[in-house]
Figure 1 (cartoon, rainbow, N blue to C red):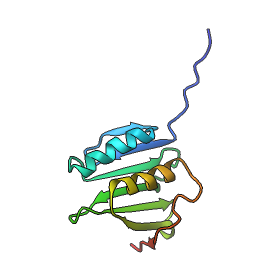
Figure 2 (cartoon, rainbow, N blue to C red; figure 1 turned 180 degrees about the horizontal axis):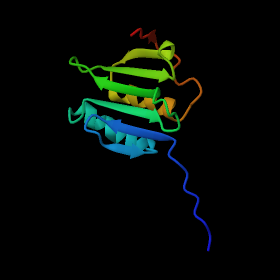
Figure 3 (cartoon, one colour; figure 1 turned 90 degrees about the horizontal axis):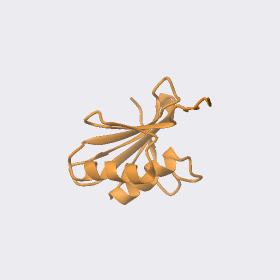
Length: 116
């Protein structure tokens, strides 16, 4: 008999309703963002499941004017940034870039450090 190696998820996507997706694909992220765009969900968080502190994540919410705020935090309050995005395609590019650690994913945007 062979042992089955089941690895822990690297990513977890959580919607406002509490629906959780372990290791979401890019297509799943786009579908979840569609729920935010249509107003079914208020926000979407994608977190690194291997960070026990819960402080390594990217998230988005749709604003009243139809634009989005996208934030990412890399473990500490000093590494928490936000930007505004006009459409869901731009949000998807940022969240997928962050989630799959694509080189230069945050380039070309004006990020502001969030001070809480």
